[in-house]
Length: 141
Image (tube, rainbow, N blue to C red; front, side, top):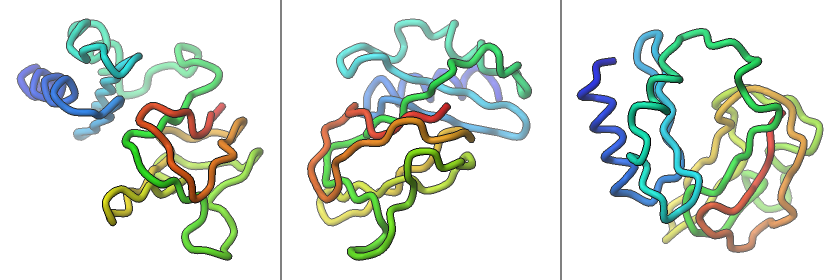
């Protein structure tokens, strides 16, 4: 992935309400995120993208617990349909890309997937209720 694409991604995150963006192209993964909703994503453009450019970064660099936050405001659904079991429960092992929740915003159902593989260590109690952008939904260890 070339630097102009990375710069475009940083600018996109800076202009949007997105709190985290992960893009993989071939064997390179770039992860751009904000630590608070008001902070610009481009505040440290050289640090975050370059630290994540290694295709097989050692897992010891990663935190022991990874938060999954609501990327947008809406109604959180923990199950695919009423009366069905939830997508995940505390203690479940999830794979990267596995569906964790659905957030309904303006009649659009947005799938929230696991950003990484691991075990669910914390899970929100909210179900069929409103969540705000940045609310902690789950933690993956």
